[in-house]
Length: 327
Ligand code: NDP
Image (cartoon, rainbow, N blue to C red):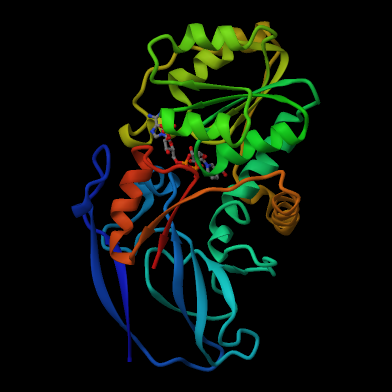
């Protein structure tokens, strides 16, 4: 008999989640039936959407999330023991699956770490690849602003912008992130949005305006960036993390007049729009890593029992690059 450990949604988040909002429980799994296979989590992801989607999660339900898992027992010849997959199984150590479960198979990563399947070679990498290239349509020599630049999606967007020959203005919330973004990733400018002179500094580093804005944060930061847009600028609205802990009850300056005057194009997206092209994004990001054009960093937390700690730390901005938990 296998015992799974899982986190269930225990009490509704109010502001920043607390450790007691999720409860670690055990669940006895039944023996496998024909067609089923048992997976064990190897790495689990903590992502901002887990906070924004909380109102849709029932109390008592296993908390939502993805993991890289390994097949450890199988009664399904299509999914042999040893196979790795990325499954949207929630925060749990063991899962009984069948061919219709919600997963995709990890392709050959050619020696790159398995955990990358939750980041640059998975959902966040594809968010950056499709969400930036398809919506922003960057051209060489143009200026790109990316917020959340020190995180999983933003750090990849900025690097893809550089690969495409753009000037990159990176915005994030700590000087540690700034050092990485300028020192290692070679972005052109870094601004800390917590800086009291943020708006003036943004003006200073965008003398030719902004052509593309990849928005990970929303709120007033987004309204300020929009004031710097050039005519026919493109804005890819990826996330609104500045509002996730306060149910979006934040105030931001109106943007409609700017949109009209500058003839801007703003588009929100969900990365699964490009589900059919999923492995195109993964293989392009993998190629860029192998060519030395794309660097990748993770903030790794050890231990499944530390999932909530890792989740809170990510929401507080204590991750650099992708926040991942090793089970
Ligand atoms: P990150 O790795 O960037 O981690 C979240 C970061 O958000 C923190 O590190 C913190 O960085 C920043 N943050 C937290 N609070 C605030 C705040 N009040 N104002 C500004 N920044 C804040 O996460 P991801 O890269 O995984 O996700 C980035 C964004 O992309 C999120 O908004 C997410 O919801 C969205 N997303 C959207 C998808 C889609 O399909 N549309 C798919 C995947 C992600 P800092 O130190 O800079 O404050």
